[in-house]
Amino acid sequence: MNRIAKARKTERKVLSEKILASYIINFGTTPTMPCANCFRHQRKCRMAEGFSRCSECLTRKVSCDGADVSYRLAKNIEERKKMESEEQRLLERLLFLKK
Image (cartoon, rainbow, N blue to C red; front, side, top):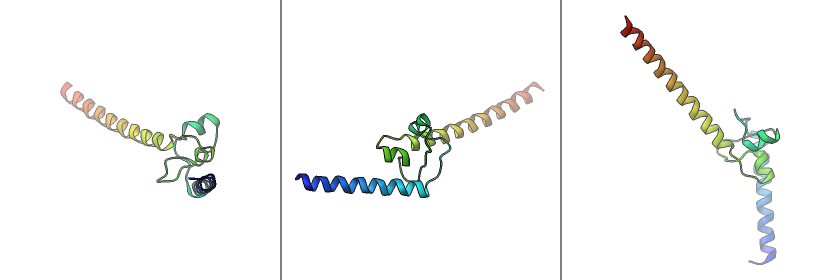
């Protein structure tokens, strides 16, 4: 691959990343919890469903853990609800046995 073809490929990649970042900014939502980079630098984190990086990380060409953070948060909330339900069930059983 010669230098001209390589430069054109890089230009296309940069352009597609800019278009993708613009799409996320316009149609994305603010997640419940921002990615680590946006949180650390106090930036507005915007994610779009189906994309693994937020608009800020995409624009700055850094890795993004936004999708992972949201997934872990949802999983932790779900697990906590299960534990609270189990705790309530055991407490009711204990009260029943005390009678």
